[in-house]
Image (cartoon, rainbow, N blue to C red; front, side, top):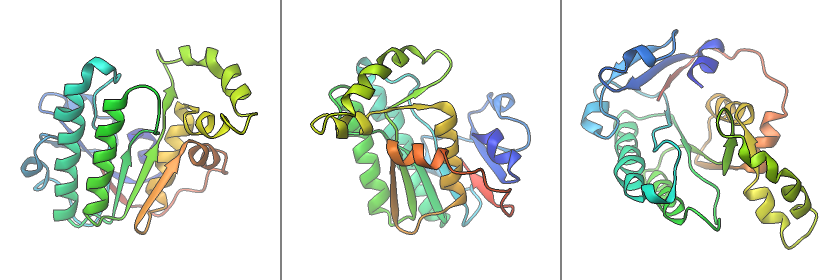
Length: 213
């Protein structure tokens, strides 16, 4: 996402752990700090910018429930505190589609995160994907015929759409669109909304703005 924003002439500041500076894509500023500690983030974050929160456990699985609290929830709490203190103009957060029959602990933690954002009074866009197809994450494509069939019946259509699969490109377009079209209040983008945004013509480069994440 960072490279996509940079290519569209945004000024991007990326928060990274000490020792991980080399992993930050070229073209953006590197801010070294602890994503789990608001006191580490606040001095680094410029005022009144868009804050994109992408911190979370990689490859979520039921046996990682403790990490959902110590990483996903803790980092969100730190980010919201920093965003409020630095008067962020817009907060972008990737949550998860729900309700769903699996990953209940993950859903519950993300629901708490959404509540924290709402209670903070931030202008925010909350995206709710279910599964994003990409490198090493393509096996669910075998389920596409079942999704199509489920969308045909009124009883199963809402769940099939809510828990639909997204490509990496669709998700990237959704995130960039959210950054470039700030919300007033709280805005939720579910899977059908993200798909619709991905089908929009790619707009010309916007005026330069600053994004933190």
